[in-house]
Length: 406
Image (cartoon, rainbow, N blue to C red; front, side, top):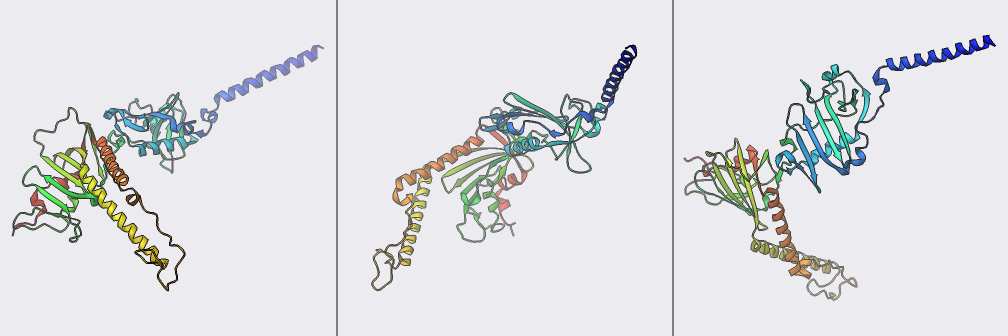
């Protein structure tokens, strides 16, 4: 009996020693063996539509806060100016779909090699992103890209383990880079005329050429005895509003130009009755501008009536062609004696411009009015730093449009 108890005691002791050995082995196992590969930011993909706040904290820059107001994103540090939703959407989608594929260092002393230090650490180079959606939030530090292939080194603040993500991840670091830079995009073929008063010299008047030569626009107030520099010299000025982007933005309230800044004024009159007034302070090297958009409803109504007349004529011609194709008289629609004709011609349905001209005309004017309001809302209350290549086309003096004097 004593021997049996002794054997049981030895067995129990062996079990204890075995458990201690296992525990000791686990405690000595590298930390990265305990981590699990998977989504970089678990749950973000399912919550993308409810994200309402994104903070971009670059180690070498100022904080940037993007906030959602209804269906619009804005930049808090830029007084709520519109944020570039395309850039934000691409970043969030990449983060939501990114996966941790390879554990890297868990040693804080080695974070600098990957660029994943806390952003307030000395010598930090990464970007920390903080994302909020309803009651959930996510944080991640984006470090360097993998020098040996695709991927970015990342780490969640507060966690020791760093990772290699399965794709390149990058966040815009500058405040200007988060602004909605597309301001206006009014095609030159919508412009009827432009009047520019340069900072110095005579007024410049430009009108659509109407097919009277190679250039789309012509200078209409040529000084006596002078010639235009080329047939295309006015086209760039008329296209100023096409694809117009901004470099920076500021609140108009409290803003004032430099005392010595040259001032250029211009009015663009569009065929639909919209007017865009531009005031530029500065030169092609650096300039700020402010805009105002209005609608001349009388011009808009005449434009609508002209479009209605063209549509009515096009419909009438289509009806005549359909009648002729069916073997009917084009004017009366009666069968032509001796001709093979269908029982009935398949006539095109008349447009609203024919069936209800008043309603059609009002709809066209309302559309122009809504566009004017939308454009004015985009520029109201702001001044914009404008790109040099655009400004250079607008602030030119009359001499820049002319051939040198003999």
